[in-house]
View 1 (cartoon, rainbow, N blue to C red):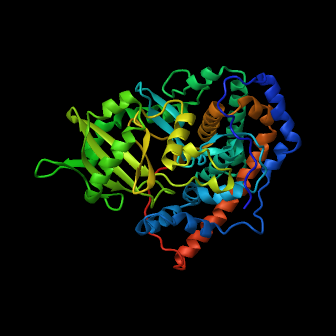
View 2: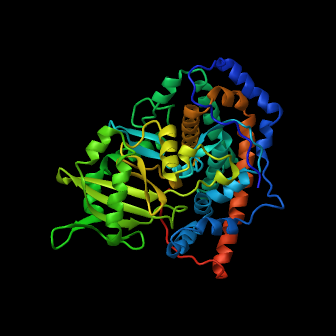
Length: 469
């Protein structure tokens, strides 16, 4: 197994001399000589390509085995569900493709459904990346290729033909290129200040009426999904007046025996918060806890939902305590700095680096020697219904995701070098449109293998739709 050759992120120094951004852009442009942009169009599975089902089986080790059939069932639902749940398969495939060598903190799982809306600490709704379980230092183009492939696969599910799928992917890559070019000369702090507020009258670009209506409707939803609104939906009082979660197996089940462990873990988690937020947390107390099944690829990992109450019953706080496992790309990349070997800390660091504004309750802990990260559950969160988008609205959403991904990469990478490599022509757009079409074919073949293995009884699966992340 080859380890990708990437440039490490620079060590923390304040006395080194920095090249002007135009020189760094020229450095990026020179990389095209050794790794042409056109080479990114290639995807043909090699004779030594790992068996995708064996990779999935390996990724199931260490999970709660009684939930693995549910994971397999969710992934078998469609090629898009398979793509979402099989980051380990695509990580292996990407490691065998041309690599520019420019590193950033990558999301690692930047598919189309990993973008969404959430509330900032100022209670404003922004559009951004919103899942970071696979975050790691790696080549920027791995994120863009996964996003491009997911656009093509989602386009197929939405009935788009080849020309329409190509157009959507090209719009995505164009959005990435145009934004990274814009950011290359911008002040570093200015880049970190950038947010995308979809509810404002002047978003990143003009919207057609249909996508404007979709965004407007979606923006309204987060304002109705705060902690107070969630309380009566998933929790209730017992006859003794205590709070408990409403059981919804297998998604939500009691965790009575784990409550003590969870409280101890939250005490450790508090040390990962800033002092003022730790003080704020101290004004809450844990009243209920439950086991929760989350996502598609995450099914089988350990996750808890915790209800805390602060200043009375009308002041609830829901925290998700989710197991953090090794990043899918880790086997193919150089080891991370020691401080990020704790997978919970790795995910929290990745989220804080890539998101414009992060959850103020974001932190990490450990339970029984396993790393976990902690975040609020569904506070001012919503997602665009991608399955309803076609034509110009689908293209616009793809473009938005490309724009946001570029801004995320510019926060920890060198946007000038990336801009120099990408260029201003459509060469990379066309290359990744070809890549996405070919890899979508591969995804359909891999999904078909899973479905056949389930039908033959070789893989156990439990049919159930749903899951996010």
